[in-house]
Length: 431
Image 1 (cartoon, rainbow, N blue to C red):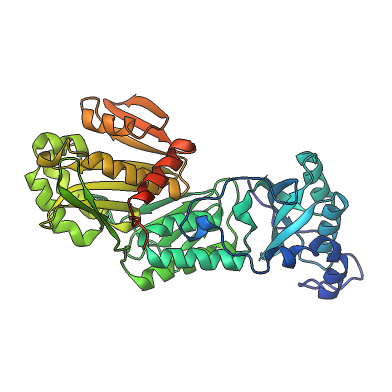
Image 2 (cartoon, rainbow, N blue to C red; image 1 turned 90 degrees about the vertical axis):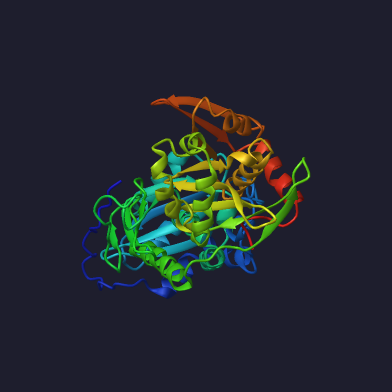
């Protein structure tokens, strides 16, 4: 959606102030904004912002429906007041308000509670008549009730604990968008280097930021242009990540397999590169082909990318002697999520793959992912059985000779997977 940044001339005889009159705003907006502070004072971030499960999308406590609305208004005295008055006349309660200054106007972002019987067309019409342009509205839920400063601080704390959280934190900061992390060079080292200026690039609905490792983080939101304020917030979050350096939570679980062997499941990163390559050497050519769908000699080239927390989360299965015998990857693929497993031959059919997959899927559910997919082959009976063992709704699709299995996580089965993993004790993937 394109935004017209121009605004009409000021009324003759009225000073062309560039900032709104605070006295006039306080007077005319008092009724519309009366509940803002009382609703947010002392409000803690929802569990989803600090690492827990997303709250259910239930209706607000006071009844009615929650909406998020953005609209562009002139930066002149009384423009915001007129908009607030129009909302109040339709019994729309303003729960929060953020302003994003532009060169020739201001983007105002509201969280609204509207009567359940209010038609959306009536709301947009009222906003338009009050001077709002390029208006965008979508349904909100309970997790949007937290105020902006608390929300940003919660996302910063979440990112500080785990480098793999950065793409998820950016998505929650900026709303519905697609985020892709690209390494400085393509996987395998072939092709031209990817680069972006240190200050980043903002182009309407796309922003590009320099990743801490020198790659590029691309954020795209086709339905709504980014504002300079949003760009600055995203850049600050990426800079925080760069200052903290590589990091993952160090929790681990010791589990006993049905045969009596003890294994340790923990987070892995690029520090495990040598041990992961040694596991590859112990794997058969068939196991490597099943996992990487290509020449066996290329398998090691992918490990540096797969083990980087920048592109997702990796779990390692380790024996009592410290040898890695299995890896499970949860990979952020734009706005989708992929799961992938490899278990060395001597440890297959012992429940290792199923344990890894259950934990990865529960991580995805905790992160708010709607579904995960696995790319495999119909002959890979172990992976097919592990996906079926999740007891989740599955979709199967054959693409260019490969089998893509998609599990939907927005149901009771995903919640059971999360609770089952918590019953094991310490949660892998969170400190």
